[in-house]
Length: 446
Image (cartoon, rainbow, N blue to C red; front, side, top):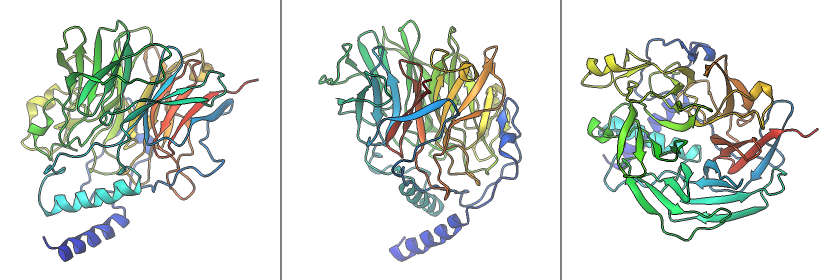
């Protein structure tokens, strides 16, 4: 295709995008809870786009927390902070990371004119939301020894990584989930910089990396790692061969180095957490796009060993996605529904269970979820941290807004929450990859 033709197509696509496409017909809460409403799909040539321009935080402006909490910036001027991890001595590690380069000659989203138009439009979108910058490929260490909510020590902890995301300390080894492999380095308590070259533990599916973020979590015994790998497409449009080993959680045995599929059919799992006092694994998952503002709800679920959750052939159990060819009724019959819908297109990434040592009773039993925010929904959703209360080991009640204000009055993104975790005192830490900060939310002192 010549340049004028491409330009004309891009202008036409931009005109469509500016109209934002269809809009939600259901109230947002219809897609929340253990039994969400699932209307008929709505499809179009260009997907619904409602994009918040990334503008960052103005001086003196910060997110809002419930009454009784104080919000501080543990650190600012970071480079796309995505994930946070608290070490046993209280130091906080921050993965500063972005999308890795795509292999030469690879394309994401299929071939042909329509695929090119969609990729071009999405490239514009990624630039608008601040997601097209090169990856810093490093982990930064923060230390707040006086517990005033601001890190007085900040060091370059580890460099030379490939789009790092999840981190886990097991014994004297720090494991990191790169975009293409799990690696490890030796760690000594109190260490503020590591010179050792990371050693590869196991390869992870990579290639196009439509979903590049890979998280990991050690079991309480420190014998296994559980590793998330998102899909290489929205619904298999890059070919199902490209999905081998993806849309899944892997179990890695640290003694032998062998791994197996623990659960599959999870389009893009990210946050992982053990329910306190149990061996029950939980995750949050980004479900599929481009079938309307009311589909499909992202979700929070316990993860059953050997379970299949439907992607790409179905969602929420037996709801068939007719875009995926050839159909697989045998796989649909195996699919189980998740536990709890978080709402459509909220993009849940961070997940951590609460703890009474740092939270009042209203927020002591449940999970915090970092919702990165929608691009495929009109009106927007997400762009906040929510708390989902638990009762008898299961989600109970509607999500409660916990950290908000990431969108300004004009609908621009001042920040976008990603990873969440608790610090040594039980306060909540939130990585903000647009605001380039790590926020700390703690109970206000009397």
